[in-house]
Amino acid sequence: MKVPYLDLNHQNLPIKNELINAARSVIDSSWYILGSKVEQFEKEYAEFSKVKYCKGVANGLDAIILALKSLNIGPGDEVIVPSNTYIATWLAVSSLGAQPIPVEPRIGTYNINPDLIEAKINTRTKAIIPVHLYGQCCEMEAIMNIANRFNLAVIEDNAQSQGAMYKQEVTGSFGKINATSFYPGKNIGALGDGGALTSNDEALMHQVGVLRNYGSERKYFNEVQGVNSRLDEIQAAFLSVKLPLVNRWNMERVALAKRYQDKLRGVGDLILPTVAQYATHVYHIYMIRTARRDNLQEYLRMHEIGTLIHYPVPPHMQKAYQSLNFKAGDFPIAEIIAKTCLSLPLYPGLKEAEVDFVCDTIKKFFS
Image 1 (cartoon, one colour):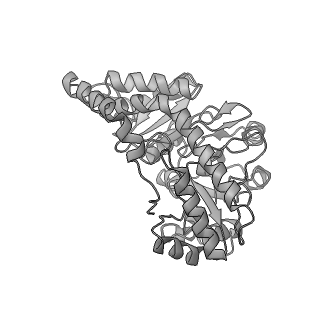
Image 2: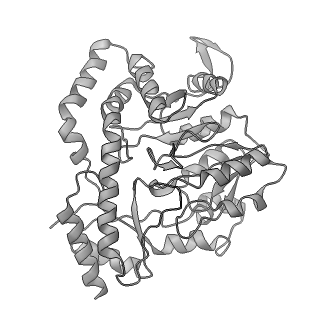
Image 3: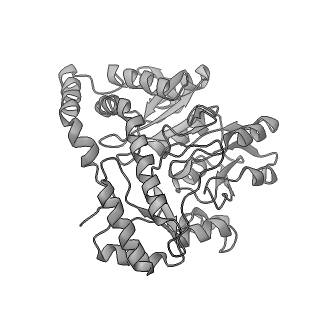
């Protein structure tokens, strides 16, 4: 049996006709940039996220950059970020001349540890970016309490956790302004790149709308120095087809993750995902940990089972950030996660028999 790490055909082929019709409607309209399809999806995604406003942008990285830019964060400012996130979170901060200030995660949930945030706050701190990593919502009550005490903005990065919740409140609704990605493999993925911001702050979102469009609200008149970062009409049309299916797909992800949990519990030295109290997990990624990660990955590859490592090098150890002078051992939790983590196949359409085959192969490895 061959089990790829990810197969998007299971999601896209059953709705192929709807996607084709969506594309046809955009072509027939002859309107391809910031038209009715983007407006429609923005309304739908705002409703999904339980906020008043949404603005579509070109990708998830741009979404974080525009969130920071709308808050006037720039040179000399500091932004608290997780030490173990995907590097895009850090890149957004440093691209504006601000400095990312890493905070370690809880080793159990892999999300930023609220207990460690306050020690990193000083007069230069302007915002906290909690990343809802792998699909699990961060401990948002504690994070929001800290932010409120120190008058800091919260910018959620929920690119991996659309639909996850903390105390029945959905990701993308907690922060002052929040960023997400619709990269094809996300829980709601476009057929290309895309991203969005969500907020209840009308003025901020108006500013984002101007910033994403060359700093212009009226064609050829530019109020500020903006960028070109607009969600394509055709991607918005695709996303409107997919959005009503996301909760069902998330439930399927949760069921598959439970099957992994049940079958892999107690196997070898495996450390399985845990979920924080009051949080939910939508399993964008099902990640296990083992000291024998590299050998296990190769063994699974030999048995035609695809895996990925999210992520093999933490941001502070990347060459891109050598100017910050971090060294091995500065963020030991992020480093141990990077050395031991392995993501197993999990996506809507994955069959139970395929999960069982993956689990049986892992058991054979450890036996």
